[in-house]
Length: 82
Image (cartoon, rainbow, N blue to C red; front, side):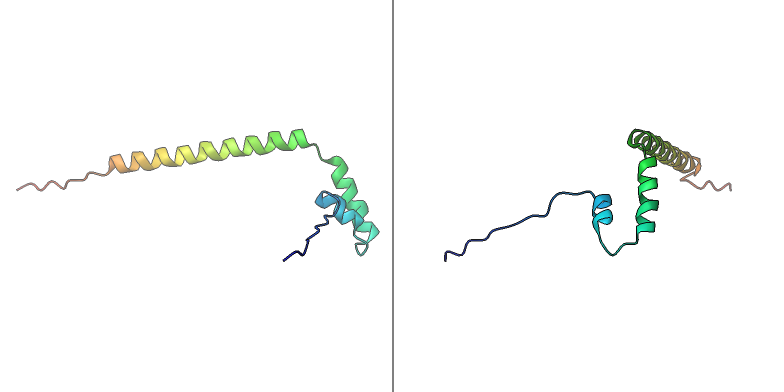
């Protein structure tokens, strides 16, 4: 009944740092990755993501509005002249 489980966790690292620490990845790839990482601006990325999300929301609203207009244009009754 009395087995004690001891959990040991690895040091917390970002995926970027894990890749850099992985020995089988070539140095050339790590250099390219580092140069890209250094060019990232989290604030600018957030602004771009928000801008794109807003654009998607506007497009969706426009699509729904167009769909409603199309439904209104349809005449649910057929009139027959005798």
